[in-house]
Amino acid sequence: MNPPSSPILTAIGSYYSAKLAEHGTTPRGVDWKDGESQRLRHQQFLRLLADDPQAGVVDLGCGYGDFLAFLRAAGHQGPYAGYDVAPAMIEAARHLHGPAAGHGFHVGALPAAPADYAVASGIFNVMRGATLAEWSDHVWRTVDVLARAGQRGFGFNLLSLSSDPNRRRDDLFYADPAATLRTCLDRFGRHVALLQDYGLWEFTVLVRHS
Image: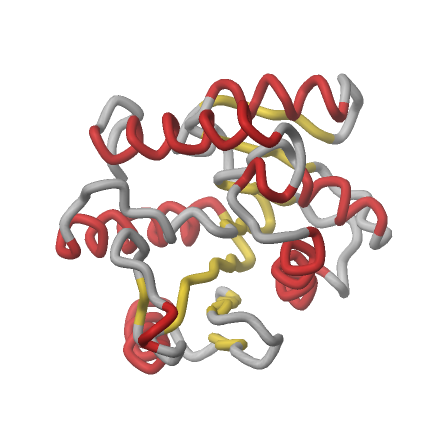
């Protein structure tokens, strides 16, 4: 994956720091439309974790840690480690959730240690001036990071090319669901699920290591 000082990660960090400064620790502060859509995205990852409330989780691009609150409300008790390239997000997460056993928040793009599962939500959407080829390479390098960080499995989401063309934005990245599924099957084996039935213009990929 790109080093923390790469232009792509620097641009991402600046973008989300500005969103946080404008909107605070709210869904709009991590560039989501509202709390309902944010929770819908969280819910897709529960398929990885539902059978093991003690599983460890790496959350790449954790923002202010809303997924941690969601997991705890859903009964998850395992260790959680959140990572984000925006220092302001990590500062906000630490302030919001406080110091406690069982979770931690860290600045960076590479997890310091693996966990049972790794997830990333919304981190592949905003290209911030990168070319399509540069961004696609960044996406798959990051997916490889997730695959290594989640020893039992991992998940991520992408905006979908199945969406209405008239509603797409030039600065956002949209992926072909079928091509993404094929690539994941080829690279990570047959235990792959693609979810695009939860009412948003995106899809979630869940991979379990065999």
